[in-house]
Structure formats: C-alpha cells, structure tokens
Length: 378
Image (cartoon, rainbow, N blue to C red; front, side):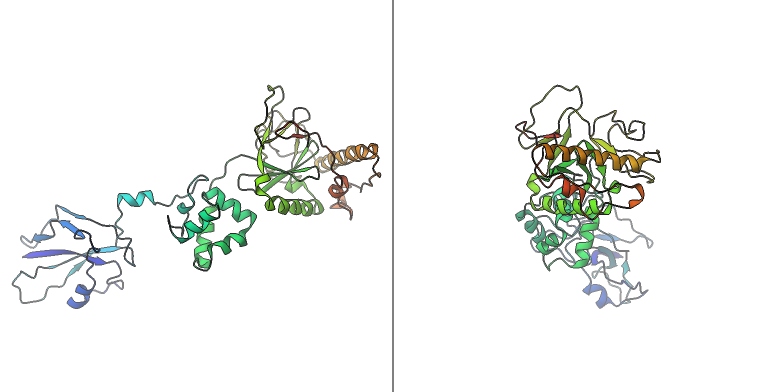
C-alpha cells in the first residue's frame, strides 16, 4: 500500500488523543507559503512492504517559525490512490522545530556580549519596531541598552511603548543582564573635586576624593546620598563620562587623547575596602603594587582588596579627614572662610548634619589628581 507523508501544525493533537477524525487530520495539514516550493520535497510517497517502509530522501524547504505554534509535526496517511475501503488511522509524530541556516544569523546569544547588536536580545527582532525605536534613540548595542537601563530605566521602558508588554520587557531586561561585563572603568568629574568611577554600563563602583579611592560600601549614608546626587548629574550629561585610565608610575609621559581623563603621575589613589566584608569590590585598572592601608598589596594588582586590619574603618576616616583638612587649608590660604569639619568617630555611624564633601568642595578647588586632554589640572 502507498503512504503519503504530510506536514501538520505543531498544535494538532496537543491533548495526545489516541484517535482523531479524518476531517481533523486534513484541517491540520500545513501547505507551503505563497510563492514557495512544496513544504516537503523528495520521497513523499512511500510503499509499504510487509507493513514496513523506510524514508530515505525527504527534506523541508522552509522553517517552522511562520506558523503560530512555530512547530511542525509529520503526518502519514494512506494515499488516496489506494483502493482500501476501510479507514486506516493516520499516524502523527511529536512536534518539532524546523530551522534553516538563515535562522543562525538572527540567533539570540546566551549570554549576550556587550558589543552584540541590540536585536540579539529577547523580544527585539532585527529590523522590527522595537529595533528601529532603539536605533532612532542611538541605542545600537547591548552595552547601549544596559547603559540606558542604568541611567533611565523608565525612559527606556517608555521609549519601547505599549507594544512591548510588561512580560516582554522583563524578558528583555533579564536577558540583557546576563551580559558579562568587562573590567573597564569610566570617570565623571563632578566639578566639586569628586570623581565618580563607573563600570562599563555606568553603574557607580567607586569614588575618588583627593588621592583616596573609596568603594561604595566604605561610604557612610550621608556620603552615599551625595554620590547618588552626583550620579544623577552625571547621567544628565553621559557624554562627559569618559574612560578612566591610570598612568603607571615611571611610565613615559604620553599626551592624553582628546576628551580623555586619566590619573596624573604622583600620588596614587589608594583603594579603601569596606571593613568586615567577605570580599571587597575590586576597582580594576589601578596601578599594580598599590599598597592598601591594611598592609599587604592588593592581590589583584590594582583594585581594593579585603583589609584584615581591624582599624580599617579608623584609617578610612583619617584618610578622608586628611583630604578635607588639606583642601580646607588651601581654601583658607586663598582668602576663603575657614571650613568647619565634623568628627570622624568610628562608632558615629556617619557624618554630622553637614555633608563634609559638600563643605570641602563648596568652591572649585584643584585636587591635583586628574589631567584634562590639554594637560590642565582639574
């Protein structure tokens, strides 16, 4: 007997019934798209010999992504040319995906890379509505998407509009956050003598005050509040956030590139880790051999490390106080009013009512740490 092979919708017989009618089977047959070749090519009619037949040469001419279920099933039925009066139950395979080589070009990456096109993220199709909206806003890569997510999540969500449901948005964001970040640092000079350090997606990871580098966990609540305010200022002018490069001591002098901000030779920013943490955040890119206030050099060759010394918090406070006192003395020499400094007790749990950063940097004072592209001290 002759058997005909057909393509069925993946949703057919989803409840896995043992029987179905001939009409139900026929209504689930999938035909080729307009202008395309027959969906199955090759040996689509096979002949049973002693009840058995092998399929030797058959292939799909199209993928399964264009139907609602996005899956096909193979079906087999007695050929209508067969002169059998009794009805024979059709055979149905399990559902499966059919992909073509073109699908690889549009494939989503798990995890995505920073440099990947933004349409590599889930729910954003290449040349689709969301892709075009993001491109018009200057968001072309996964890194661009993550930066905008950090700087203005609600603005980014609003940009994509109501066409992207909350569930789709969550899926896109979750996929984007799988991205493996690099170790580059970026800086923003606040104009108050404080430099914010960001990672590659513009999340704040540290603060430089004078010649001291502090991780966020080492700051008091009052200081963190100021950092948040400066962070918001930075996000208003993202073009002023530039790559941060530390010039190693003893290295040959090199003219900074236009717009580049780098640490000047001389006092090395000292990374200060949070006391009592199991592993302190690392600020990559700092010079190798930096000695931390706890004694031993950083095992990473340049970011903060765990400081086992129990007096770390005291050292942090003293280091910051030294910076404030030095800046205050310079301010006074220039004819300004003397600054009042709050106490830095270890058990105080924070600064006094007035923000010491705010007091220290109420005027534009040169900190002598960073150089602009023209070599001017900032």
